[in-house]
Image 1 (cartoon, helix red, strand yellow):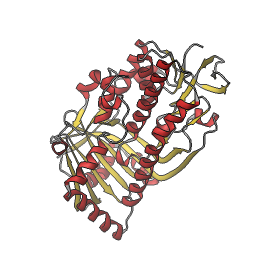
Image 2 (image 1 turned 120 degrees about the vertical axis):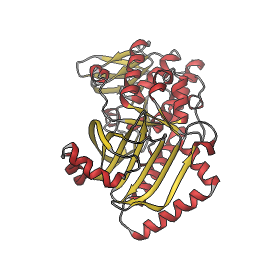
Image 3 (image 1 turned 30 degrees about the vertical axis):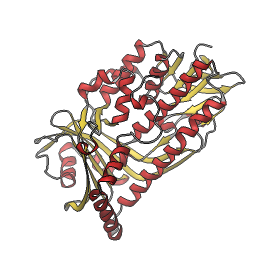
Image 4 (image 1 turned 90 degrees about the vertical axis):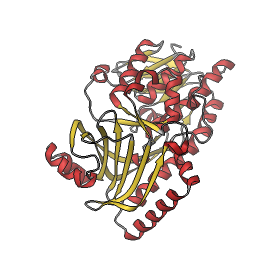
Length: 405
């Protein structure tokens, strides 16, 4: 066999997994449909990710963090409040400060372009069989291995196939792994702004009736915006020119950062839930959005995927050291036991938070305001929320503890 593991999908999770396995001496073939030339463009497009403290430790253990840390903006505080358009923040709020946690920033905001370009460069330099601009059209599982066939007829064999190919995962579909799916009739408008006043490393979340508005600090006098509206409203807003777009954003945003202006491109992302009933089948496993695509209300999508990557890479490296077949059922079952409950809990939590906050109910607004006020006044509750957001709770794989495999 050319490799021990085939990874389909060369996005953030797939590339990170390939680097983790290859760094431990496991032969990897990484197959990705996208064109590397698109990833090498250095244009700022406004997209960014919240990287938890634990995820930053993982990227550090893999040698990735050193290359992107200078472009990462630390999050020192998180402020969340219930609000209405034109009314400003409500009387109840949540305020998390890294000083209370006592272990550095709660996380970082990293631009998509820096993370993707770094991963691409490292994949191309590593001992990884990298097949870009390649689409998988078939996969077959046998008694001792799995084989995939590309659109151009190339066949690749391995002991294990891992699907990291996103919410519309062809790997999951071909494996007949059932996934729960539904839409929220919400769309996130994603952009970045320049502003007059410093953000001081504070992330803001305004819970509006149509959906949350997240303001995430970037380096310099810039912030990333994830602005959720009902899908038909979002389409109408996105069709406006920049000036009219900002006219709609300003009453939701407020003036706490002074004058604002758009920088980079604008995007829209329809929101929904995708959750696999099973993460595994014979010689096949799912990671990242292939297994769980969630609402961005908690900003944990990428961090959840990196937890999958950390868990399965640790199990595979340990199996390799034992001389075990990497596609064996016992390894895959252990991976599912490790990750399925956590993924389900996070999916239920994000779905529940969205339903609780994205509505006009005055009764629910009163109840959620009181709940936020109670959490904010009890230090032990605040610390528990901060630890969860920083990714430092639960049975953590070695990489998320900053340890090498």
